[in-house]
Length: 404
Image (tube, rainbow, N blue to C red; front, side, top):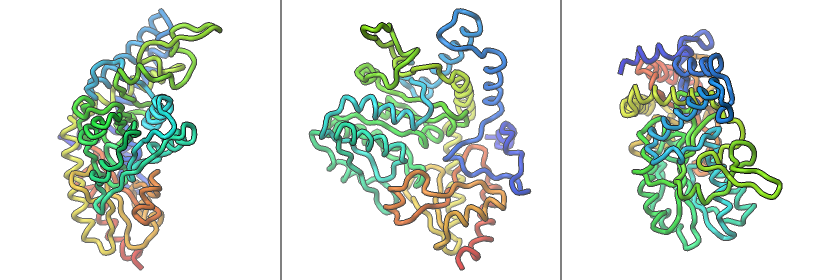
């Protein structure tokens, strides 16, 4: 890859922060958008701003065509069997809430849902809400010292009442990449379905929902070089057909009368109201960017940066890295001695480094680790070895201060 050429496509990388060249290492939270995505947004607003699916005029038809093209782009990216399995959402969080709210209505009191100790709040709270509404039981898979799931414990959690497993493809804190296909096979052998939080998986590795054999897969555009406020939920067609609508209103109906209402066919049954057709078009541009660069090239580059950074960070006195599982994605969560993560983050901000600090919406995991939060550096395709080296130099400079 020509990283110099790739970086030229991201205007924000030209700015400074605190009078220093910006080094953006907060990609696990939100990735930056290339110029082509920004152009797609501008074109949608300036050339074909019209509501989709509801008009016969040219602007509406063009907007509809752009949105449905985006659905096909998403289908191909995930290798879903049909576009009917691709639902537009506001992001991973809404996708997971859709599954919990809609598929959850098929569960009975006493049925069980399995999650893991490394989940984002978005894959914990919806199931807790369902437990309050329907009386389901939520079980948790523990992790080992390296941050890997304990698969033996996972297997032992299943009972005849287990109905669903919901797991992150990759941890946003530990970087651990979970064995989704193996977990799916175990779940299916017990008659359970599996839902995958793909927020940290889709940007960094090739996704094939058929090979993974997952039943649901949720992802976010803004973590894939795309716009905010839009994402995808893949759902196995036979399950989506069984599930009641998530929301009611326009677009998701077949026919409405005061005597009763019928639902639209898939995927529109789950897309009530005016969709973010502008975001959908821009999301397609982001996926096309990923495809042109090559997801395998992106994964290799980010892994090399991860290895390079980790090796150097471990030589810094007081450095503690959380998550050391083999094959992890490009995320490093760390603390320097007993220094507060906010203090470290503020020092780094003043030196031009954008990193994330806090519990990363994973407070139960922080409890398992015995800490309040971490500093997190995470990589994207536009990050460079020079940026990593300058980041390490900054850590070496502030470590003696923080270790006092």
